[in-house]
Length: 225
Image (cartoon, rainbow, N blue to C red; front, side):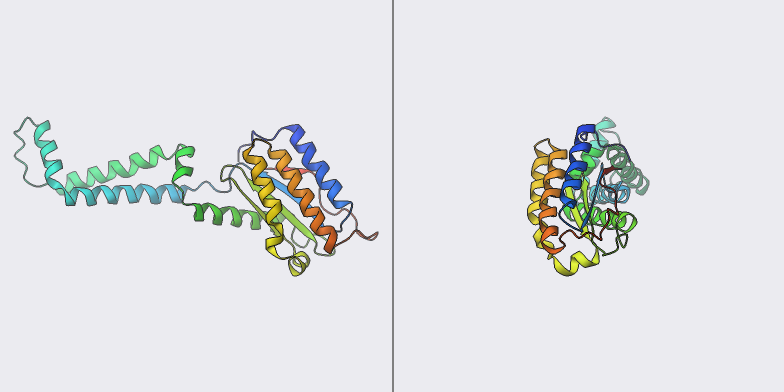
């Protein structure tokens, strides 16, 4: 994946410092990951292209006289066609299908057309996958937690290890998520991640206060994919 251009070296320093501060008061281990997008959505682009082609065929079947008139006009009134041939329908549908797919290579348009539930599901799936690789069962007390930000989808996820899930309701992280998204939208992604980390640290310190026996087991730095 391409680097997330909005994150500067200073943003990395701010987020890393926020993680270090937050972990001083808790045995919880916070991992931060940011990526440009959580999926390429190629299957969605093909599905949209198919829908456009089928819709075009439906329109032709409902209003054939319009298209017959266009053909007759192009032929100077001498086409003599009274019904659209099957080969013409096939070519028309194929042009719509592949033309739409070509247009959807432009990611900004594709992301406008992707239904929000699909974006939400893909971001969540990617967050869980990264959590399993980077955080899951990698701490002695099962107190790892991932803060994941996907820039193009404008979505973030928090995925926690089993000890945290057992004590903290998912809704508790709502304020941290709101703070993160609000600051990202205002053009301060590093500040948003740092504020979310700070609020996560407050929650973790209440349920998992710092003990002398717990080492720093996961990296504090922001991971950019």
